[in-house]
Image (cartoon, rainbow, N blue to C red):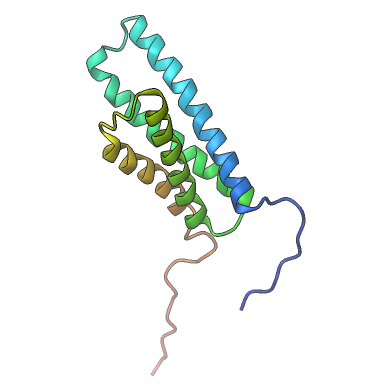
Length: 141
């Protein structure tokens, strides 16, 4: 049984932590879009390979956004990280509906990439604090 910890004031509620994670995800997305646009403009990255950059951007944004959300909430790691990924995906859906007239092409792949990034952040520290395999004592006969 786990003892109840004293509240130190260093954590946020789950919705506030998810908002922080969404802010981090959107910041990384905006920065990555700027970098990708500059690479395409300088003709360093061909337009045909833009999809690979977007895939890396979605993975990184959801991963670091989920880590930021958990760092602020500090409880229920997997749930918070997956919720951060779902919130980020919902925001991407709303941007698609608002700015691109509801043209939802490739949103299944985007969902899987977002879920993979946030799920990886959630699974990152689950075994923390647990030892490896326990040793068995052998009796001498």
